[in-house]
Amino acid sequence: MAAKYALIGGDQQDHSADDWERVLGSVSGEEVDDDRLRLIFVACHPVLALPARVALTLRLVGGLTVPEIARAYVVSEATIAQRIVRAKRTIARAGVPFEVPVGEERASRLGAVLEVIYLIFNEGYSATSGEDWLRPEFCGEALRLGRVLAGLVPDEPEVHGLVALMEFQSSRLRARVGPTGAPVLLFNQDRRMWDRLHIGRGEAALSRAERLGADRGPYTLQAAIAACHARSFRPEETDWEEIVALYTELARATPSPIIELNRAVAVSWASGPRDALPLVDLLVATGTLERYHLLHSVRGDLLDRLGRGEEAASEFERAAELATNGQDRSLMSERAKASRLKRAADAGAV
Image 1 (cartoon, rainbow, N blue to C red):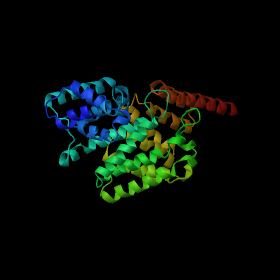
Image 2: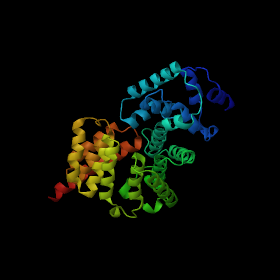
Image 3: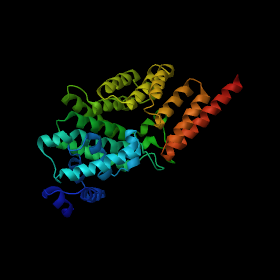
Image 4: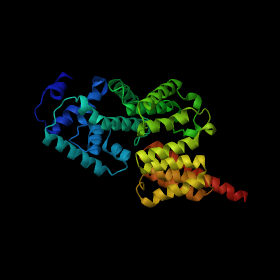
């Protein structure tokens, strides 16, 4: 580690992209301890555009693969690979020093650092590849980094908002998979397994975020949505109208087709699937999420709830084709079969 910090902290000479790959890419495991957060700040240099900063840091410090990063952004693997290569070249040309920023320069990198931590957590919460639906070690590391960051910048509301979100989501981890590792969806989870300690910490962090910020930012809004679930001991007690309102506010703060998709799901439970389906069909028409398996999964669920089993099965099959995680594929395939069986049973009853 001393050799790494001879480069990172004290040496002001220019370094090549290969140096960055060697120094940042070799940092992993227990060795880094809290120094991983330092390295994330180093890698999130403003000489790079924000998407390039985040992609490079996720790859070299976060340990995510190019396909995992591409899935997180719903873009092609080639696009992410090009961003990373160009980012390394830009850093090499600019002679970026290996030093931890302070003051205003550190503040200017905070948004990128938060995004990196958020995406590392998401990869743990819903793995984009492999045969395991969860990668708890990613969730644990992201939450640890968030807590350290909250101590470093205690007056930043969005830092506490992100910590709150991760605490709430971490509370559900044990309930999200069954004994065989198969996914357990929200409505089927045993909420007695939700970790009340995480929920309590989430409530405290959310309260602090809301006290510090006049306007709620994207992470605080997502934490408020997660809190609505955490406060409901039974699915039917969920305040879906409040969740729709929060997603509407979030969509204004951070326009995104994925946020609109999540909002449509909330609308389906607040007002019914018939009201939500046109919102999803509008997203389908834009083509922006065509290769995002959850778009087809959500549409399949809405069609299934409307009694359109054959159409639902086709959507679930499309979702299974696009899913890159083995458990996701199995879940979508099972839902397709269930929709067809349900349709056959309904036809037989008629």
